[in-house]
Image 1 (tube, rainbow, N blue to C red):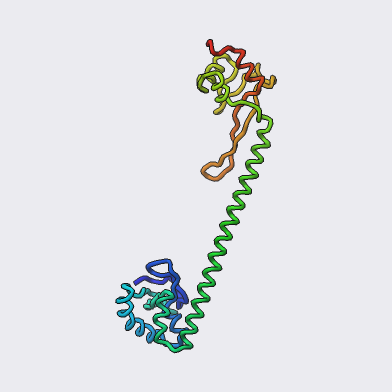
Image 2: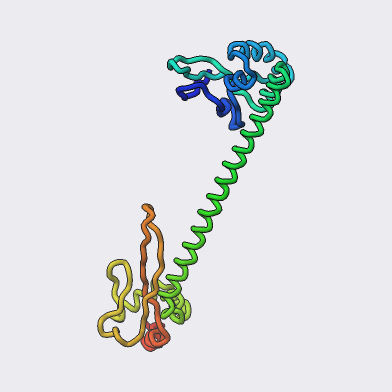
Length: 230
């Protein structure tokens, strides 16, 4: 038997075989105004008929009583509860029906709250994305009309690897700390700008990397090197 890991008499329980909402036979007994032992006996007597029609037994579980001792009880679905209630008087059946309506309203409220929370989280995520895109756009605005090394290489009919290698050979740029940089003699001439992009590390930390892009003046400078003949 499954054990309900609670220290007192359970009012409602999760089903042992599914996520379908259930209540315990202890609560059924309380609502019906009957001793729990009598309800357990009635359920056991009705189980044979239920098995013939439904091809399944009632879910039998354990709970800890006020003394900490394990006791058996049934965890019943709404359909099973209403079947058991056919043996009760009208008032008891009415209380069980109203109890299930209460449980279902509570479940619907919890579901609605979870959906609202998820929608709120999604809205926050979308706002964060918009802010991040705006920040990156503003930071990169001065480099909007610039060309990347890949674009310049494609214009010259070369691969970006070939272009960068030639620019290093011509002492226009050099490699340092994971990116290409202009040599001092080319600085201050408006040949390049920096373009940034943001990303997140595995620990969720926001990071930024920059790379060099070429202005119109920079592209003309590269053309003047006549790299096709080198």
